[in-house]
Length: 215
Image (tube, rainbow, N blue to C red):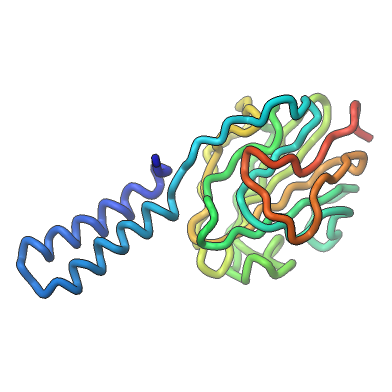
């Protein structure tokens, strides 16, 4: 299985350390530790293919990440952007695929990076206090906002989008390193299709449907 390019230095670094220790003929345990670490990094940074599900419709909003639904419904006013929104939040454990995919297709209006704290990703405050990237996309005249939010273990977000770019629904656009969350903010007219506690798969699970024409 391929891995995201952000993981290559981690995998190669651990593997090189393991190979060096083996070459130096040191006791087997230190070398085995680094080989195991390389395997763990390869697993964390895995990047499986996720073909878009057939016949989901142009109004479908796909999960931007694997994980468990933390919030589904009216937006939490304490963390949502200004205005009226519906909100879907996904918690990613360290075992989930951390490559992120665009929930909708359209033109990227704005990408904002904000440094911050490293609260647990399931804490509602992490949505506004933690390090994060926020992306605004215009889709068929409606604006959808999604955030990459780091957690206790995650210490960096990687976003490969820039204003003016066109992104396709389900397209890979970045990764969050080592446990995190994704917040998606949708027009109030959107119909949420998931429930709290539900497991979702990035690029496959329909989390909401947009109303024609929005609000």
